[in-house]
Amino acid sequence: MKLYNTLTKQVDELTPLEQGKIKLFVCGPTVYDLAQLGNGRTYTTFDVLARTLRLSQLDTFYLQNITDIDDKIIKRAEEKNIDWKELTAQYLEDYMADMQWLGNTSVSEYARATDYIDDIVKQVQGLIDKGYAYTIDDGVYFEITKFPDYGKLSGRHDVQEDDAQSRIDQSDQKRGWNDFCLWKFSKPGEPVWQAPFGAGRPGWHIEDTAITEHFFGPQYDMHGGAIDLIFPHHEAELTQMESLSGKVPFVTTWVHGGFLTVNNKRMGKSMGNFVTIRDVKNRGYDAAALRLLFLQAHYRSPLDFTWESLDAAANRLSGYNELADLRWQTVADEQAQGMDSFRQTKAELLRCMQDDLDTPSALAVLSAFSDQAKDSLVSQEDESSLVDLLEFVDDLFGLQLAKRPDISNHQKQLITDREQAREAKDWQMSDEIRDQLKKQGIGLNDTGHGAIWFRF
RNA sequence: GGCGCUGUGGCCGAGGAGUUAGGCAAAGGUCUGCAAAACCUUGUACACGAGUGCGAAUCUCGUCGGCGCCUCCA
Image 1 (tube, helix red, strand yellow):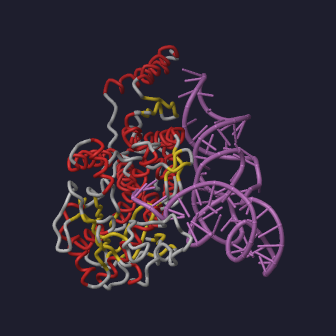
Image 2 (image 1 turned 135 degrees about the vertical axis):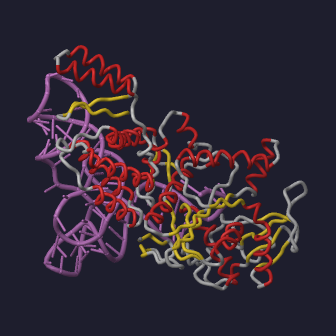
Image 3 (image 1 turned 30 degrees about the vertical axis):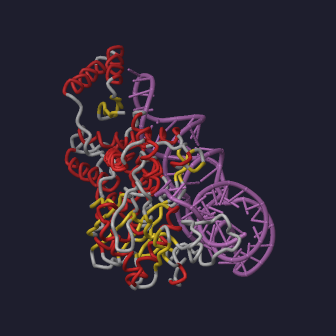
């Protein structure tokens, strides 16, 4: 398995810390609004990564955090005049429903920040004890200059004097302009947790290292997120954890996904121009079509979303659906032209995915197979091989091809009736039945082996 | 300004020193009652300039675009 590693800036062969096992952590959402398509793309990428690792015989624990306390949440709850816990509970439920709908089902454990306050407090205290953190009026901060390796992930080593706009966690008392907040003391009325260094709430970066240390210890294999998190978020995580544990590297492989744009512009929650996963669902699109759209681009490339591009993906999905429908209409062995490439196709799909998650090539392999199968049909003998392949594709991509049910007996009878009408050269009857089936979402292809149906 | 990504045929998009990526769209053909599907054929692309190579879209340098991050953001 090869993956591009942001830390080394090259494609590295993956070497698990513990043989046969992968500890994967991905930054989850801040639950203060509905998940948008950018979230959908990122989480689909890592869902497919986890699936690939597992199909590569790597025992993968996929951990994702849920940020359920931060400034945006407090602000949004005030705006809506509801309790922040009520807000996060609702959006967490919505997020889970959206992920379920999209087929992002490979997460082993979701960890809510507020369930790990003890771990967070322990880390902050540890950083204070070791002299990396200091306390000022509004919170506890990490002192960047104490960690010489700061910048090794993002490549930002020097503080730019003319970088006047940059003010991370602004405060006059900070020792360094880019020192980041570990713990923020609460103002009256704000959510608060007790801590030896002062009552307050976690800063942005500390929840992730606290959660990963809780589950994985101070070092683990893989950390994912979208590219916008490289700086400052992931740089800060690395800084915290390596300072605290003294163990290097904190994470072996850093994986970052490219951005999704809408009409070539960044979609952001704060820009008010975002398309949510729910918008796509409500327009009646198949979740698999959206997944396919995400997978058609390489995960590190930018992907531009338009409704037209989603239509094109839906069209491509229907091609795979036709392949899936063949399992219900295999032909007698002597009729089929024979397909012996099931195992080879599976191997090729996995090989593409193990090459830095090359989903475009993998889909090309699947399309080529699908075209061949639709041309030659599948023999009764090969039915189990086809089902096996469909299930493999589902395991890999989550497209739910193998779950498509058979058509009804009545519909099958109509197809038989039409075949008889065609034999009798009753073209009017034949075409009427074809139109009738079309209204039921069933298309027909007349082949040398008889009519083959597919659902569109 | 700093850090990083990127520029591919009508469109979308991988790849990455010599050998067809793929998809969509288009034209012609085979098959067919019609349709659909599938298949065959056709298009010879890599921003620009210079350099290093026997050879560069692929490496180097430069130029010009586009984008992201540097500020909450997947």
